[in-house]
Length: 95
Image (cartoon, rainbow, N blue to C red):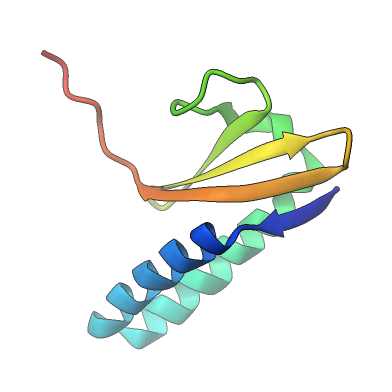
C-alpha cells in the first residue's frame, strides 16, 4: 500500500514541530523524524492499530505516538493509506 499524506495533516504536524522548535530545535527535528518513520510502518499491518475513537468505521484507525493521535484511512480498493488527522491526545472527561 502507498501512503498519502494530506495537506491538512502536513500543516498540523508542521505547526507542532515549529512549536516544539521554539524550546528545543533538536527535539523538534527528532520528533519529526520519528513520527514519519512510524507512519512509514503503517502499511505493513494497518489493522493492528486501534479503530479510531473519532469515527465509527473499521477502515479508519488511530496511531498513537508520544501523546499525539495520527488518524488514517485504509483504502483497500486503491491500496492507499491516507494520513489525514493529527491532534494531541486528551483524556475524555467522565461526568
